[in-house]
Length: 598
Image 1: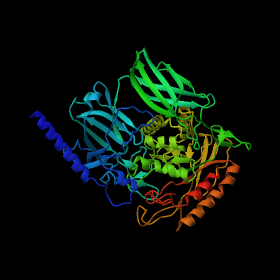
Image 2 (image 1 turned 30 degrees about the vertical axis):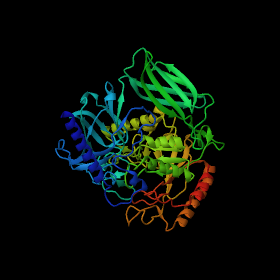
Image 3 (image 1 turned 180 degrees about the vertical axis):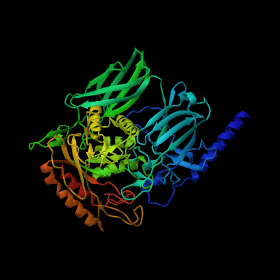
Image 4 (image 1 turned 90 degrees about the horizontal axis):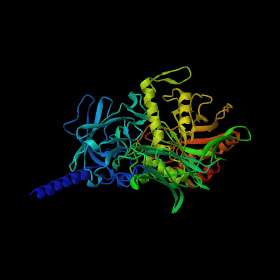
């Protein structure tokens, strides 16, 4: 009888899940990408979410959850408003909801969890790729986590709250003040228009479970030195004992390159003989395995990868610093990449879509991407690493409400400063091993910019393996960071050298607009720095811009970033339409023209 009842209950659960999946559909009638048709509640971003630190056991929690919107004063809702497809934010079409949430409201999530029996006697970690912005996490009524930040991953150890062999209930509450708060929020606003876009609230990256041993590898840094032909590895562990050993193996395909063993708490210097260097032309990656053992028994093992490369500056024959990759001058030509999607907003509909913009950027002859005031999921950087493109990573801006000081900086309150520094460090920690990232950009055009010298110096000290582009396109602070940066529309132009050892770059230029019917976010009032009525005129104007750059390179320009990769909402100055259906210029012609610069 008991067995029959269990089978019957399982059948009811299956029927309910099946019907819910059948009822899900994208919200609204805006344009969508072709990948939207590949999204289903049963298959939504199923790929392993953390390529830089992989374990074999994990469980994806993406799919249909329950949601509710309440006032900020409300407790956990007794009833739910409907279902939402995680990890798409509630404002997006692919969430299946398409609703706004304002600063006086909370967004709640609920779903159930079952833990595989094979995970018994292990710690169970609940991982969130990103949730915007303030998140409280509850399992079976117990608060297990609290996080503030929209762009950094966080985890909760939920082991002590789980019911063995039973269904467990996971509940989240999320509060997001968007542009009414002082947190990092990029280009999100409650009333989008111009260069400002739709707000993103709640879960927007993969949610997943992972079983781990109590003694385990938490994270590590892998720092290459191409001159010494070495890789320096530092590992953070938990609950290690005196007899524990860390084994490190470096492989290149089927070939073992290096083996090293020692104290898990020490620093390791590993010789990489005659290394094959990573570059956009040859994005060579080595595989890396870290194994933590005790008396011959494996406790934990993670798989990763790294690239041997060096980014630096060096003065040329005219005594002006140039950007160098692997000790060779390389002019960096990139696109300003906002990372927005008409169907998923902050979240690409599929992993194939996530890689698409990178692939097309390379096909168009660019060798760099400036990831603009947004941080992507870890898999985006993995695609940049394996495909080979240089990344300038912006810190998302926020807190533009403070009073401007005489030097153009903002006077931010202590809590605002603390939140900025905390999230910046977390973002850097999570992406510090990606060889594609070569430049950190802490501020853009004075948006919330403060303590410029302090922040630039801290980044340089914390990560000496990369360069810092401090005040990008704003009032210059001579000596801040490694790069002097101006923005010019349509341009091109370059900064006047101030003899302070900083390379000269054009951090934004272009903005040439072409709205294409059936591929635009709205029918009227689309926006661009310049307008053209045909792809032929657009291409002609683009080529005229590029033809001016060689003279600037001769004078000392080291890089130029074109605005932008794709259209975004009412902005129509992308090389590609917002729905990714049309590349607005001839690929072969533009590729040849772009590559001529480097």
